[in-house]
Image (tube, rainbow, N blue to C red; front, side, top):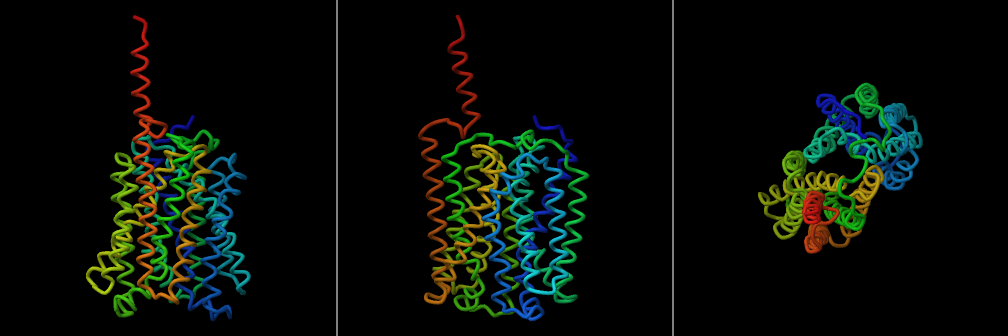
Length: 411
């Protein structure tokens, strides 16, 4: 049974772990912003520094499930406290790295910590909240990750430009230490199985697998274009290099809006909250393909993609808490793998198409992948309704049980 946690303490844990998500995503993407500073300082090419980001994602994919299984009996206060401490130590090592090898090793440790964090954080942070408002809590928790590319990476890049790239990692190390201390103080200690969200509320293994496949397809669709959105904006849309940063900010800010909108709908309309962002993303990607040279339209479509990506991510996490066929920690690790598979797959697909086809077809391919994900989820939803109330509709199941009890009552 889940321990009782006061609403104020539950909100404090939510804010703390949302900040941790912000720190992890900022750390993951920071080498992109500091690439031109890290490469010459360590005597490596820009592509080699770029591997610090792509290699990071591969580690998360490979390590998520094994680490989650290995640590599934450790109380979450101790586990997340140590995870954030490792985050701090790894970033301190990155700040002090004298060679590329040392920096890559520090990134490896950070990626292992992130793999574990994303596997256990969602269930941990949502557990103390009543079931009726858990969707809102999921979306608010996701705000940290959504803000990282919009706020964290630009701030880290600016700090690296002003004080050296090592300073940015040193600040993140300090942030990690502060979060580790907050976790130890605020998070109650109890066995993981006793958490309020330790198990799916409406477990369904088949539909959970469908969710994972659709997630990989949908995220892959977004990332096919997003990874190479800069050449698209320059070559297809004809924007000047000076306006790229404001355009990317528009997309990131729309992502924050998407997360906040999702917070209002996830509890009352979990299926619509999953399908609507995919629809918006698909339309925006296909719109960029058709109208990529029309600058006002491009701005609107970029905002649509940013909003859709963030809202879809929140909806997937929320749906995982419903459908998880066993431990939500293991299910969350599966979602993390699906996300990172989509990120890596979309980036590789876009990279393969760009040299031969140019940037414009990337929007078409991304839109078609999003359409495939949308179709898969829509068919699964219709199939579930056709079968009738099942494990994914616990409220309907309880109503059916009450009717049966009444009908069989002795007369």
